[in-house]
Length: 347
Ligand SMILES: [Mn+2]
Image (cartoon, rainbow, N blue to C red; front, side):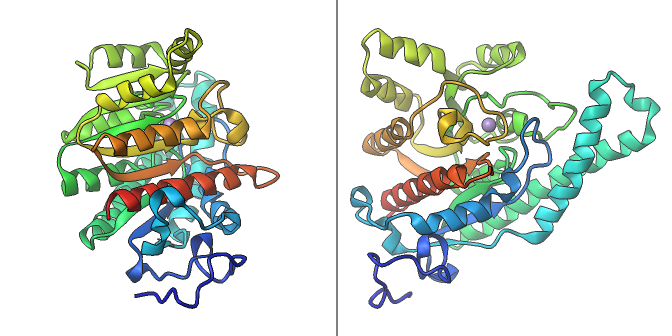
């Protein structure tokens, strides 16, 4: 066990320690944060593959007192180093993807260009590799009895973790905080696009009994049809509808309880930061006006826990990297809150 007797949680963080300045080793940590530095299929602003390092640095500024979780961090949080091979692969394939999107957006015929055909194949194979890698890493951690938080990277990164969670826990639900539905089938020809992660999850993971989405305010007609034809496997709380109900005098308490009631016994949280107001994530890949305040989302997670449901894991994705470290600062504080709540709900 890590000896906390000489660790002063009120002192400034020692940058030689791990995330949040905590002194734990992986073997002693209750929660392992797995960084996934990957952004091959991002559509608009790039940078999120490097967010993990920025969040790690920003985490040193977070104060270590969390009354509501009875200081869950004392059970040990540990973040791994971002895998350099994964990052290099992402950088290489990202360039290919940019060329490919540029090529097809001009209406060029793919079959006439063997270089582009090869690029597309490489990108889709790369995504398969990543999904398998994430699955193996998270499955091994879950088998060791760890709790796992996945830190992206873009929103395509947690698919392998969803599969490991399904194998470990059986039937479960996902609460997705997001400005987008991510229900596109094969966006920009990329099978495992960030914009398709929930489509792929629903297709490939039968244990995923229900997906509840909140914060959505930018979506396609096909995604709307998918929701309508899902036989209530997908329930979406659009940002506009939630806000209208608030404007008409309903409380966030009532709406949050209604959202929670749609979720099964075991709940996984997939948190795309673009579900928040973009003032909190100005450099995220695809920012959209509107969105949640951070406390609205934390309140919703507390409601899940208070309802007696089990919070089983989370991902935090699409954190941007900008001129200053504001995005990472927000990201570190969300990571802190989610980590404490997850550990407290599983002790
Ligand atoms: Mn998303």
